[in-house]
Length: 100
Image (cartoon, rainbow, N blue to C red; front, side, top):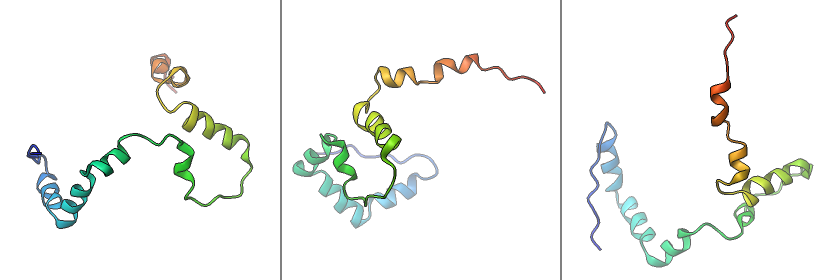
């Protein structure tokens, strides 16, 4: 399948083009374009917590950290009412700066 040619722009454009043309980058790109590999990384994992299993467990008091992790990383991964309620951008206009 033909790919569109990338046109480097900006000051780092030439550097990016050189990096993209290295044998390692070409091999990595070739591997990532394989259908089996692409399918593997196309969707986020079903069990979000599995992504953290390779890391060693540290001894800590689970409350409130486990509750916070469950709420943020598992229950509310996407922009829903939970995050909209906590969005500060709607209240930025109400901030006043007093001259001291």
